[in-house]
Length: 79
Picture (cartoon, rainbow, N blue to C red):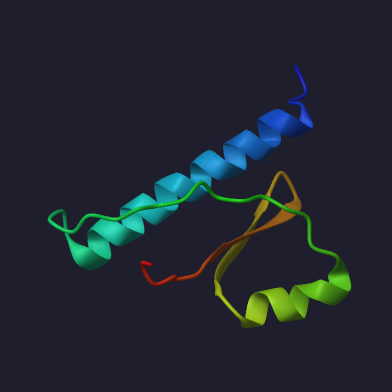
């Protein structure tokens, strides 16, 4: 069993966030709407920052290999 590197884990989380965002946007707005989706950011959040993080965005949380994972999405206006 090969253990994935931190970079591989981060890339997998980014790809998962892209898939979830793409599926959500298509389901919510249909296939005729065009979106400019930025590359997801992956970062560790310390325990004391978690409440602030969870309260300001749409967050999906779950366990992956017994480790907590949270995906957050926020809407930005086009500039």
